[in-house]
Length: 151
Figure 1 (cartoon, rainbow, N blue to C red):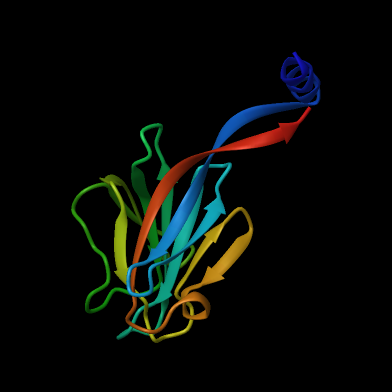
Figure 2: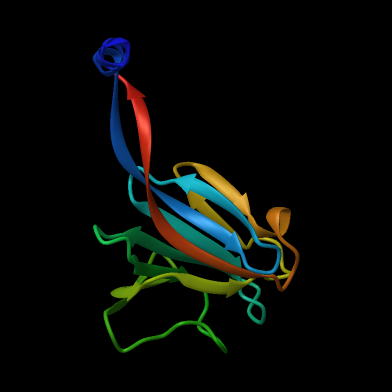
């Protein structure tokens, strides 16, 4: 009976809902960081190793937790830079943009030794070189988690 009263009081003031997080798992060190993504969008940025220009990959999370690549933005066409006949390729104010939908269960990437390799979500920027060593293997995946929210 006491438990029922405590639960009733709790649920009058709080409720439980789920939210998506992007989990950055460092496979090299067996460490992880979870970043809430209420908007379901996040960006991975890096500086291209040959062209030395910034690249941004804009992702979203679908209802099944798959990671969807929506758009890639970059400033030069050169060796190793994305160009695809799939999707829409255009120039917006001097920036090349590829818009297409590619689905991934998770992303595997090696941390670049060049500063600028980061994940941005909900206004928070996580520089990979601050949480991992150069060349560490990171797995990025979406994860649903339950949170308690005050009414």
